[in-house]
Length: 394
Image 1 (cartoon, helix red, strand yellow):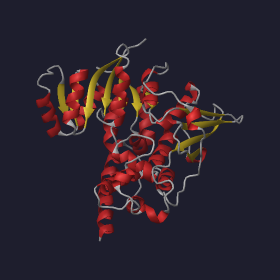
Image 2 (cartoon, one colour):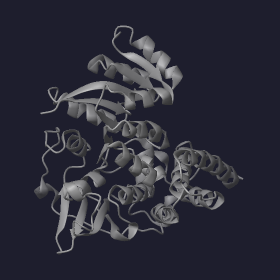
Image 3 (cartoon, rainbow, N blue to C red):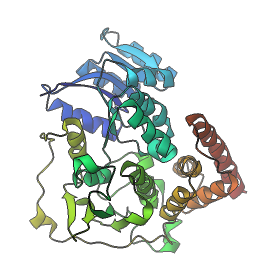
Image 4 (cartoon, rainbow, N blue to C red):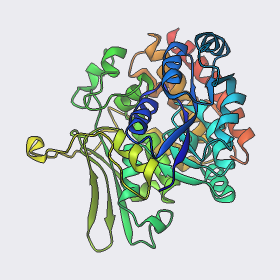
C-alpha cells in the first residue's frame, strides 16, 4: 500500500471538505502537505489546526494575512498567497497527489502546474478542461501526469470503461456515453415561471450539497453543458457520441453503451465522497463513509430528454465545443460573470443564457494555440459579458 501525500486546491469548498472527510478515515493511507482556499481564513485556520499541513495558501492576500495571525500557535504551517502560492504548492515535491477543486477559471493555472509536475491529479475543476481542452490533455501526456476524473458523472463513466482504453472508446467497443443530469430544482417549471426564480431557489439543489456557482449551473443545465465538453476531452470523443439523460433521482451517475448492446452503469447515493474515494485510492477501493444504497426505498428510476428550449445553456455549450478554438473559454467566462451577476441580484435567472449567447456573438473566436491566448480571451470575454449585462439593464 502506497501512502499518498496530498495537496487540496479548494479545501474549504464542498469537494475539499468531502476529501478531508475521506482522508480522516484513512490516516494510514494519506497525509496532507498543503491546503488552499480563497478568502475563508477562519475556516482554513480550523482545518490547519486539525491537519497541520506544511503549507496553507489563500488566494486573497488579506485573507492570508488574517490566516497568518490565526495560526500563531501552528508554526509548522507556512502561509502563502495568490496564484503564485497556489501554483507553488500544486507543483511541489512535497505531495504526489493534487485534488483540483477550485471553482471556475481560477483553478486552471494551479491545476496545470500540478499536471506539469507529473502529479496524480484528481480533477474536480471541470473549467480547466473546458477552457483549454487539447492543450491541457497534451500537457497530461507530455508530463506523465495521471488524470483521474472526480465529477460524479465522469468518474462513473471512468468506472464503466476498461482502464487501459479510457482514451480510446472505439477500440473498447463503446458506442455511446449516456451522461446523466438531475435536471436541477426547476425541471418541472413552466418557461414563463423561470424568470422569477431567486438565487436562494437556484442554490437549493434537490439532491446534492454544492456551492452557489455550481448549484446555479445545475439549475440552468450549464453544468451539464460544461460536463459535456469535459467528457469529450477526457474520453476522446464528440458530442454526437454523448447523450444527456435527465435522471431526477441522481442514483445512476452515468452509463456507457457497448457495441454488443450492453449498457454498464455506475450507481450510488448522491454523495461526492464516493468518486473522491475512488480517485484517492484507485485502482483500489476504500471505505468512504457513504450510506449503503437502498434500491427498495428508491423504488423506480425515471429518465427524460433535456429541454433545451427552457434551458438553452446545454445547447450553447455544445455549439461552443463545435466552434472550437477559444469558444469554450468564452462560454465559460461569460457564464461565470452572468452567474455572479444573478447571485448579486443584477440579472434574472433567464438572463444568464442571454448574456452568454450575446458574449459569444461579440467575442471573436481564435485558435487556442497557447495558454496565454486562452487566458487573454478569458479576460476579454469577462469584459464583454460585463458590457452585455450593462446593456441589458438599460
